[in-house]
Amino acid sequence: MIGVVADDITGANDIGIMFAKSNYVTHVYPFEPGAAFRAQGGPDVVILDTDSRFDSAKTAYDKAYAATRQLADSGCTFFYNKTCSVFRGNVGAEFDAMLDALGESFMIVVLGFPKNGRTTVDGIHYVHGRKLEESEFRHDPVHPMRRSDLVGILQAQTRRSVERIGRETVERGAEALREAIAARKANGPGGYLLLDVTDQAALAAIAEAVRGERVVGGSSALAEELALAWGAKPAGEASRLPLAKRDGVGILCAAGSLMPQTAAQIAELKRTGVAGFELDTMRLLDEASREAEIGRLTAELSAVLEQGRNALYHSSNEAERVARTKEAGARAGLTNTDVSRLVSGAIAEIAARVLERTGENRLLVAGGDTSAAVCARLGVKGMRVWKEIESGLPSCVSLSDRPVLLVLKSGSFGKPDFFVRALEHLKTQ
Image 1 (cartoon, rainbow, N blue to C red):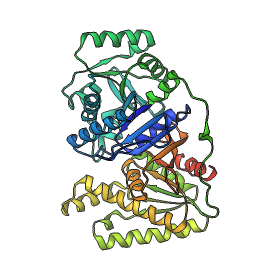
Image 2: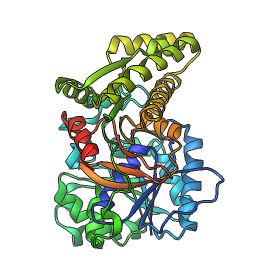
Image 3: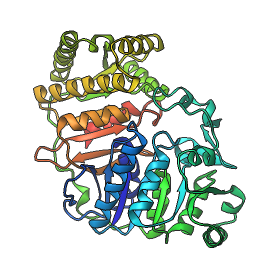
C-alpha cells in the first residue's frame, strides 16, 4: 500500500488522481490526531490530509509525523510527502517529520509539474516560464514567495543538508540518474536531493530511477509517472458511480481563491450565462451582518438551482476590496489567516445550507482552504478519487452514507474554461 501525507485537501486530490488514472484505488482521508486510523475497503493508495499549510512549523511537523506513523502502522511500504507545487507552507518541517517518523535519512524531492507550468531548471523554479519570485505567488497573502532557488528555500527550513542534481544528469536517462543518486547517498550524510524537471520525459526518467526508493517528496506530478513505472492496474469495480444526479436541480459552484486562474475561470463561467453572486466579505466581520449575508446568498442560490440552472458564488476578488477586508480585520484583531478562514467558513456554510435545501449531491469548489472548510462543514470523512477532468484536477466521491460527487480545485490550477468543463462533468457522471 502506498501512503501519502498532503498538506491540503486540493493537493491530496491532485496527487490522488495521478494514481487513480492508472486504476489504483485511491482514498483521501482527513488526518485526525490521536485517532485510530483504518482505511475503508482496502485501497491501493491512502492519502492523509493534514490541512497544515497555514499551521506553525511545529504544528505542521507534529501532524506530518503522526500521519506518517498512522500510514506505516496501516501497512504502507512506500511514502510520499505531497507539498504545494511552489513550496508554499511548512515544507522543511513536514519533510523532516516524515523522515523522522520512518527512521529514514534521505528523500528525493521533485517539485516540477510541467503539465501545470511548473519546471525546475538549474535549481530555479519557474511558473509558466516566469521565475517563482516573479510569478503571482510573490503576492500570496499568507506565503509570499520571494525567491526561486529551491535549495535555498528548503535549506532555510531544515537542518538536514539540501543538494540538487541538474538537468544534464536527468536528461541522460534513468540509469545515469540512478547512479548519480547512489553516489550521492554513498558520499553524504543523508538529507534532501532536489532534481531538475524540464518536461514530462524528465519526470518519466526520474520515476524509473527512483521507483525503488522508500520515500519521495514534492509536487504530485512524479506520482503519475511512478504509477506507470510500477505498472498500471486493470480496471476493477471502480467504473460505476455510486450516486445518481438529482433531476431538475442545478449544480452549485463555490470559489474562495484569489488566484488569477480562478478569477479567469469565474469570468468565463459568467460569460456562458451561469448566474453569478458575490459574497460581500466586509459583512463577515460582524456576527449579525455575517448571518444576514449567508442567509441572503443561501436563498438566492437555492432559488436558481431549484429552477434547474447552475449557479456560482465567490468571495470578493478585487484587490481594493480584499485590502479593505484585511484592514478591517486587522482593526478587529484578526490576522490575514484569520480573515481567510472566516471567508472560507462562510462559503462552506452557504454550500452546506444550499445542498440541504435543494437535495443536490454535486458540488464544485475552488481554493484549497475553501475546499477544506466545505468538506469539514459537510462532514466528509473520506473520499475516493474518481476521474480526471484536467491534469491534477479530479472529481471525488465522498465515502459516506449519502455520497456527494465533488470537484475540489486548487486555486492556481486549471485553464480558463475549467469551471465550464467541470460542471459538465458533474452533470453527466
